[in-house]
Image (spheres, rainbow over the protein chains, first blue to last red):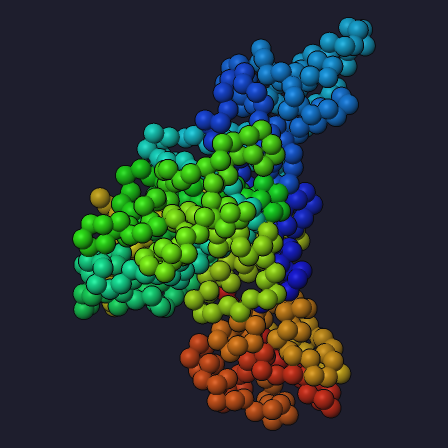
Length: 436
Length: 111
């Protein structure tokens, strides 16, 4: 159980909060590059509880500014994005991507004080299809994160964005709650439905594995382990949490499962999930041994084909699924009785329903965690300690600056000899992978 | 009121707290942010994240551990009730006990 204070310290991310201050010291994936066209309308960007506007100028540079014009606080959302800057609609003041005031056309030249005025602007970088924003201490800007999936060229990955109407932490916890997989997603798939030689069949054949879990330099790491059908082997399914909100989900084969979910807080009760997946990765169990699709699982984590409501310009108008709380995620009770455990379509929709149904902020005082929740519990403690260490001593986790710690961090499934301990099994697997 | 002294495994006092008689110790420690007491399962005896080592002189002053508590400690930790380990979720601050000394070890297990 968490105390009310610990729960709030973990969950709330506005300016000045414990977790908000901590998270702001990391680069935050704020939107996809494809959302911003040169000289197009500025986009409302709700990020970390702050109302911002994002725009791409005539030269292709991206700016992220407070949406309030520093003149008389009209919203720059209504501004004109033209000729290398964003011009406020009210009095024509113009700002570049760094917030510099370029023009003050309603003021006579002799009174022009534009060099003294700056719109609140955050540092921005763009890489491989994502726009990152840094909202922390400008005196110590770290390198961009180097998780494998984020280092792949844009044409080799799928970048899927989906808004969740809940706090960021329960969203992140969903990815490291491994034991839900054999129930929520595969609950009505039977032993005889699956090819027992398929390495991913373990999720069906043994739904109550045991777990190991440890703190790691990047955050936390766990594995589920079960005896493999091969006598002298153990079946491992690894997954990681990386500070401050990244999860590497295990739904695939270790070698090519380059994936990451960025659980980006929009505000305390809305999260933008940014999922980056290697296009050529082999997915885990999606079909039965006769080749037929497992009901409900036709759509994968890359999000291709998830039905979405068209985006609008509102603060929460981006990337909303059609299956949502207001329509109970279009649950099909007949399907739930026959062949789809949850009655909800798609892995994405099933996860969305569970994490949003906890409420916008989870009252964790009411929980009763099982040994299978060890990763969730440990990750909370790791986060709390790290955020408090920053608040009290100004110390941040190594991975904030030593971004190479994420290189070759992989999640997914593999077999290893039974006599190895789990950490050794992981390290040997990574070493073996690097030789190829 | 029971005065509870929390020590680390070197015997150094980390905290001294006053608990009302009858207060559940795990809940009291979680509410007071005692490091190393997590109470993940909220008192169901299924996680052992509220493990404490009771000072030798205080062991007999507490109600004895149930078979289930002893089995949980044996299954999920490297310790036993015989060595003085208890789940703090199974202990309410005993009425009439003036002081209680407990050792709490923080789990720093790095990959």
